[in-house]
Length: 98
Image (cartoon, rainbow, N blue to C red; front, side, top):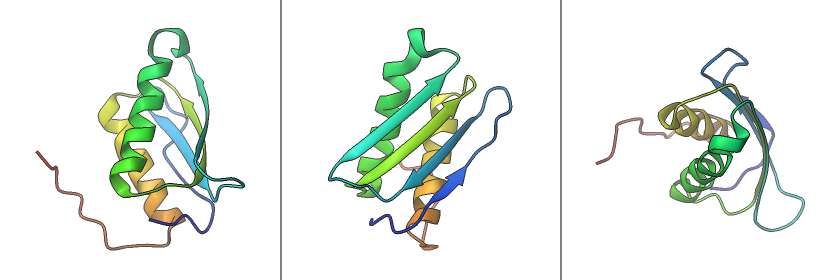
């Protein structure tokens, strides 16, 4: 999936995360994460973001995320929604894959 514009998903509410994705200036995934639980879960949040982008086939993107204690399922949903919006695609399948 190719990121062609800037898009976001999520809110600044407690237990949510806001994710902003834009085209990368250089190859690869660049993540800027701010979190109220950075010390405890920062690495896990970043892995959830990278894993979700990898599953979607996103190879180049700049991601800014502000986490307010979101669960992994919320992080993955917000990253997916922002990625599809940034790729200007609407051919998504939101069914849970086992």
